[in-house]
Amino acid sequence: MKRRDALKASVAAALLQRMEPGLAWTKAATGAAVQTRPRPGTPNWPGEAEWQRLHGETKGRLLKLVSPFASCLVEARNEACAEVLKHLDNPYYVGDQPALTQTSGWQDAWTSQPSAYAVAAAHTVDVVAAVKFAKRHNLRLVVKGGGHSYLGTSNAPDSLLVWTRAMNNVVLHDAFVPQGCPDAPRHAVSIGAGAMWSDAYAAVTTRGGRYVQGGGCTTVGVAGLVQSGGFGSYSKNYGTAAASLLEAEVVTADGIARIANACTNPDLFWAVKGGGGGTFGIVTRVTLRTHELPDFFGSVVGEISASSDAAYRVLITHFFEFYRTSLLNPHWGESVALHGNKLKLSMVFQGLTQAEAQSVWAPFLEWIKARQEYSFSGPKIAALPAQHQWNPKLFLKYAPNVIAMDDREPATADHFVWAGDREQVGWFIHGYHSAWLPAHLLDPGSQTQFIDALLAAAQNWDVGLHFNKGLAGAPKAARDATRNTAMNPQVLDAFALAIISGGGQAAYRGMPSVAPDSTKARARASDIRSAMMELLKVAPNAGAYVSESDYFLTRWQDAYWGSNYARLAEVKKKYDPDGLFFVHHGVGSESWSDDGFTRATS
Image (cartoon, rainbow, N blue to C red; front, top):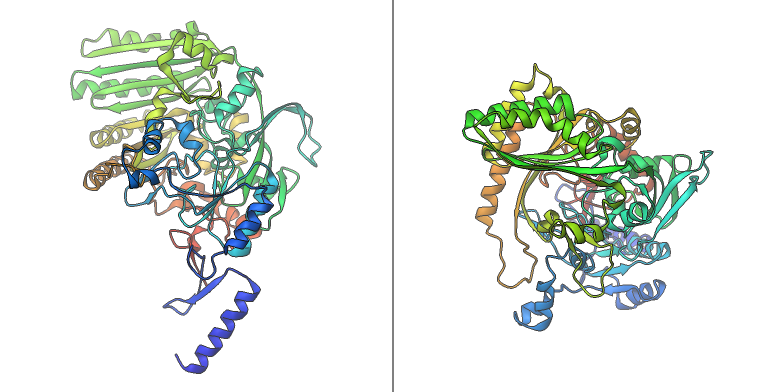
């Protein structure tokens, strides 16, 4: 470059620095201007005095983060390290650590690492202060409530974390009307961004006697689930969590706390209903409609084994015919899994008595019992009063092995996790794929090809079919409400979400004597991918659920949002034109490097 050109470039860069403190601009090899976010130790990283001002603005809620495993690096057997390892299977403990995430990483994708600083927000004004600070200094910003993200979206080193864990109030309303709307009052619940579904269910159902459509795992964050779309065990009847959203408070990139509902900022309201968390702003509160409780919730649990491959094919064919004719309706949800020559049943029901559920299953069970080539463990068909579905006292008394409590002292009495979900705490993902399966695959003319693909997939890896995560068979009202969200419209015609995944034990950085076996993890990831490829032969354009999907997905815009992506991109441009909010494979992330630190602009 000539000296004169270099001088001009340096003057321009100096002007940009004055106009936008914290912005750093360089020249890419292509000649395009490249915006980079600062990291600790770089010239544009905020100085100590600036961090202290943020500390004051948030009334002492700024934290400098250090990994809980830092002491393990000094001495593997010290008391502090032992205390961390003792509680590492407790999701409530992990969630209370701003330097940890519920997933420890993903092979060749990401690893859990602490942000540089965190604002432990207790009020909306704390979030506003953090957003304005990040905007002013062009910092990499991360948002974490529940911290359950498989894709690592609540994790980034060298970032400022807005941690909403303390914003966990749950308030019931008998006559809620969204701001500025002429709507009739309705039952609703307002939930802070840091609340988990155990908090919501305890208030709404156990104590309030009503139902709110939420997540199946009790430690998932409420706000994050809503922004992703959100499925629960009974979504086949009530639709997605996003479909029940009446209003949200959102802090946008300009540092303004906005109300978003169908009448006020309706474009932003639509975008946060399934358009992805941490993308359009920071949701600080959601208000969801609540529903009358059915009399009963219940479950069907068991395992059927076939004596040969031929018998297994007959079993799977017969089951899906039974599902098509008897279970593809609002009463039934959750999943079955294909494992070896076994069909595992983990299904739930709502709105039926135990006797009615047994009557539904009787023809299928009689068919099984009449054939010697099958052995059956179970099934256990049980119902309980719906108000006690999330009451840990009941389970501790009658079925203590079904749940695990937060085992710390003191602990909140409502905080439990289903025992089967505890194995995912801290897990290190090897591979994870999902696909919505259209209901036409169950038609008699398509069923043979579907069964062929399903069995071929199961030869590579276990296959789970989650019936509650597809809305074919749901009531019109639930489908219409979900249609008015940002999710991929494919969910409306899907009978199930197929999930094929696998991982290993927790592998946080700094954990003593723990290192993922990369060779084994990659081999498992290849088998998982091969299994999904078999299934995609009969659903080649299947979309994927953003919260449960492949980190390496190439057609993610179409897979996650389908025809809604263009509209989402316009909302992103309006409320966050400079890309302050970045998540992996989030709306607008195409303009950034994989880590969200570098943006090329023409």
